[in-house]
Length: 160
Image 1: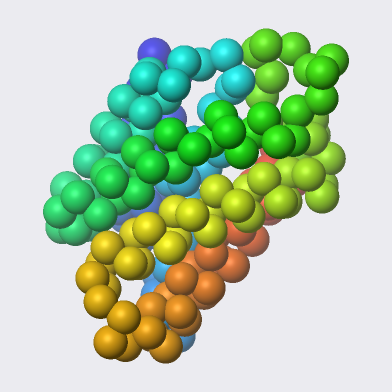
Image 2: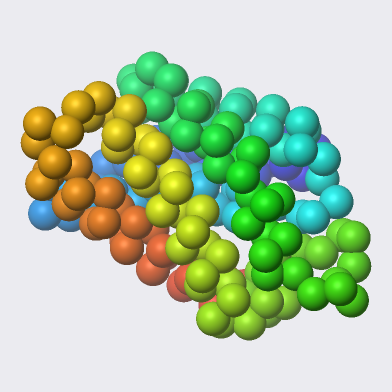
């Protein structure tokens, strides 16, 4: 039930607030990826991928981007346990929640940066579907990555 509320809230925030922001015509905050970043360690891979698929589908419906967010969110949900395992210690519990408070600033920053980088590369590559305008692709990827990372770190700082 808690995850359904997160999906609804993040979808509405992205659709009505963050999806309308385009700094310098290239940077769009993609805050709904925060859903995958905060997925606890003990949630199974299939439920995580299914919930991420549904969140991506909801984003695609509101943004009229058929399949871009769905595919990218599912990819990031698939890779999240592998990336998270790089930052876990042996004494961390099975229900470990990856947050700034639990991981520390540097570990959380690198964890978030890796997953956001994968997401931004995936979504903007699928959107462009060619590298004819690679400079614009690079600006969109880097700008959105940086803006999203700043918003997520700010949110985590406030939550801590």
